[in-house]
Amino acid sequence: MAGTVDVDVVVVGAGLSGLTAARVLQGHGVTVRVLEALDRVGGRVLSTTVAGAHVDLGGTFVGPDHEHVTALADAVGVRRRPTYEAGDNLLRWRGGVRRYRATIPPVGPAALADLARVRAAFGRASRAVPLGRPGDARDAARLDASTLDGWLRDRHATRATRDLMAVVARTSWGCEPAEISVLHVLHYVAQAGGLDAMLDTHGGAQEQHFVEGAQEVAVRVARDLGPGAVVLGAPVLRVDHGDDAVTVRTDDGPTRARRVVVAVPPGLRRRIRFEPPLPAVHRRLAQRWAPGVLSKAYAVYDRPFWRDAGLSGMTVGDDGPVFITFDAGPLDGSRGVLLCFVGGPAARAWEGAGPAERRSGVLRSLADLFGRRALEPLGYVDQRWAEEDWLGGGPTAAPGPGAVAPLHRALTEPVGTVHWAGTETATRLAGFMDGAVAAGGRAAHEVVRALAPAEGGARDGAGGAAWGAAGTGERTTGIEPA
Image (cartoon, rainbow, N blue to C red; front, side, top):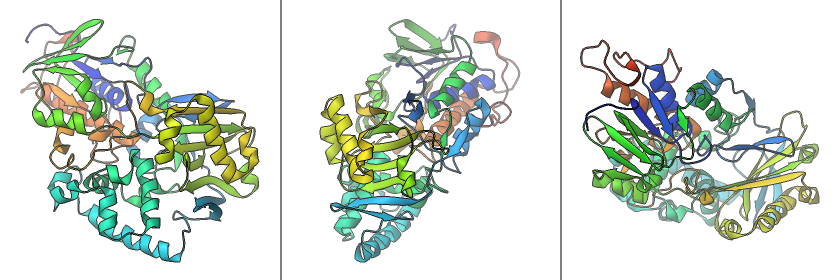
């Protein structure tokens, strides 16, 4: 496949990971073309405005240790603000509603004792899983053969503990505990810094929002890549790959390059035809690492009336369709914004309903929590990620039992001139926006090392780029590889 190339590298996917890869590569003098199936950039980050309020329909929150995405946002001038959390939280549980503070809801002394016992066992098991190498964990095959629900039942967790862990599963992976490998859950929590770091607001993964929106980070990175660098509405149908070049094909024709970075969710890799076919482990990964199903909705009010009652706007519930909420409004109270996560058994019916029925279901849930005032928003919007043709669900992959120990390595293992990015490929904070950015940097540095000549100096190529040994990327991006 040797010969003239159009660009040095093609990146498939203009989400945060693919755009980061392109940015880092450009910083090393590499010519890049990003091909995106959707008519927008951002992938699983999507922002809009409702009744004068900004809302994020996809990835929303960042925590204090999410250093890759915050560094990228700082570099392109997207600001952050704290998530509102003053006041009491609400728990809707077993048909009643009660107020509480702290992370753990007040589900009763016996239930709390059992939850503490199970959390301690979970923490020990999670810390024993090597980061980035869950297949190397002790008893990896046995853990991978079990689901989260099976693991909880083996430890005689109470119904209350299992229900609370179901809320975690629905929010984190968009699935039920009986649908996901417990090895994946343990590894995911370990690389996120533990359950507290995953679930907390202050000091945790929900600590801040982006003022201009998470998608604005992607929009500004894409803009900085320059005219023509990002091509929208261009689904990649086929990748012909050889020892020294690739040909990436869309309906608009082929693009020849030296390398390709595929930055799409693992389950969507199967929609691209690779010639020659990928190794069996990569094909099975694409088949078995499907995304979860989690939707979001927002209700926007003229003011955050719940704050008047000393409420934080944060709620947890065991009944749907809404099972978690946050106050996502501005701190000055100029608008009241309730972010709603929709998932679990009740969400299956909600997902298939029409717009009016979905709106009614969400607002009824909010009225149960905050009173009849919640039935009268200025504006409402929801986002069903499972309906996105080129994303297929969210928030991240939810591999079932038996799909992790033998397949995890295929997330990042290059196949000749084909490299992989995307948040699921990160070794830390996979599934988060930070993992997406870190993984893009890691893939870019892989490519730089692969393309660098053995003895320095310049080389011929598209754009006449000069090459040297791969650096850290700090001088151009501030982003380290994962």
